[in-house]
Image (cartoon, rainbow, N blue to C red; front, side):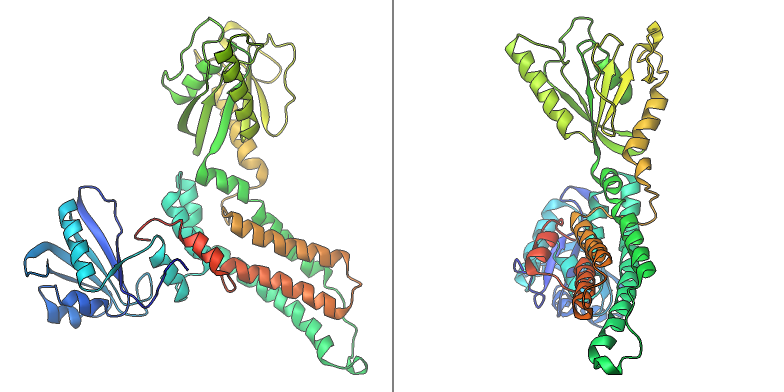
Length: 437
C-alpha cells in the first residue's frame, strides 16, 4: 500500500504552500501528543489536554529557539479526522517558518505523509467507508458549487446508507435461499419462490443512482462544448457573447479562426470548457486544413456540439442528443426552424442555454438528491444491477446457483463501500489525493 504504514507518526501541510496569514500542519499517529510536547512551551498542559481542546503557546527547534507562536488542536484516539491520536498545528503562513517546523517534526520522529494518507487512516480505522473517503477528494477538486454539495452529501453518508439498505434487502433474500440449502429436501415446508417485485424494486433504485453519473460528472469535472459550423457562420461572435469578452477574432473574412480557441466558463451553474473551432470547408491551405481536422476531432470528443449556421448551409448535421443546430444573426432577420440568436443584441441566447442545460443535465432525471461521480462506484453498482437482471432471466436455476448469484451481488456492494477491496484499488484511490488529506 505505497508505504502507508499506520504505526508511524506522520505530518503534512494541509493548507497551500504559499505565503498567507495562517497555515495548518496536520499530525497523526500514536505518540503524537507526547512527541509534540517535547518542543512545546506548555508541555504539561498539552500532555493533560482533553480531546477536542486548544492549546496556545510556542514551538521550539532542537536548539531551543522559537519557531513560531501556535495554537494546537488536540485529538485523542477515537476522535478527530483519522480516529488516531492527532494534533493540528495552526501557525503563521510564513514559508521559512513552515519549512523550519517541518524539519523539526522530522527530527522528533514524524514522517512526511503521502498523498491521501490521513484519509487512508480514517478509512482503515472505520472513520469513513470508501464512498465517503472518495467524497473527501471530490469536495476538494469540485469545479462547481453543485458538485461540492453533491460530494458533501456523499461524505455525510447518503450513498453509504442506500448501499447498506440494498445489501440488507439482498441478505434477506439470500437467507431465504440458504434455508433451502440447510435442510433436506423432504424437510422443507414450502418451495422457494423468486421475489420478482423485490428484485425489480432494487434494480430500479440501482438504475436511478447509476443514471446520475454523467450529470454529476459534468458538475464536478465540467462539460466539453464545441462550437462548430461553416466559416463566417457566427461561431466566434457567439463564443465571445457567452464569455462576455472579446477572446476570439471576429472578421467578415472567411477562415479567420485557423485553430481552436479554448476557454473555461460557467453556464447555468455548469463548469464548461468552451471551444471555438476553425470553420468547416474544403480548405486548400495547409494550416487551415490542419485546423479543420482538429475541429472535427474535438466534435467527436465533445459532450455537446453547437453547430452554428447563418442559414446558408445546404447540408446541416442531424440533430441528436450530442448535436444542436443553432441559427445565428437573428438581428439581421435570419431565423431557422430551430433555436436562433443574435450576438449583437443577445436575443435568443438564454433559450439556447436553457436547452444546453436540458441536454446535459435535466434529461438524465438528475435531481441532485443522491449522486455518484466515481467510475469505480458506477462499475460496482452496474455489476450488482447486471447480476440481478441475470437472475431475473434465469429464475428456474437450482437454489444453490441462485444463492451464488445473490452472494455475488452482495460482494459487489461490499466492494463499493470498501468492506472488500484489493490493495491495488486502495492504492490507486488514495494516491490521487492532495497532501494533507
